[in-house]
Image 1 (tube, helix red, strand yellow):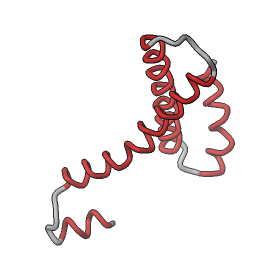
Image 2 (tube, one colour):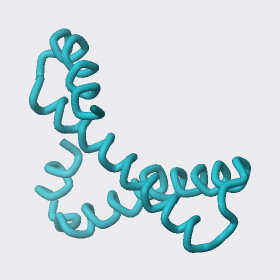
Image 3 (tube, helix red, strand yellow):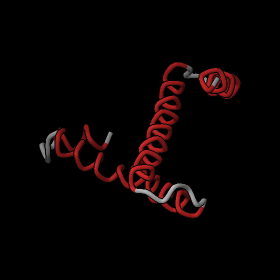
Image 4 (cartoon, one colour):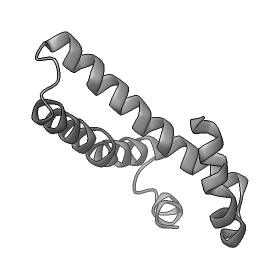
Length: 97
């Protein structure tokens, strides 16, 4: 609603809004998970090489991205919240296997 109202007033176009929203969301979707992964990697005393650390962070980030995508997909595929709460754990468990 905010975007539509501000676009009607010709305050800005969609691209600056999209870029600003994407950059602000990157803190929660990229920076914090990578920080958590880095802390976890070194505290669990895994292999202390840059190559293995990079592989770990990459795999960790991909798994988070997949889980986030699965949540978005299920929220679109199952619009009724009661049914979604019933089916989402089963569907997620099926894809983990």
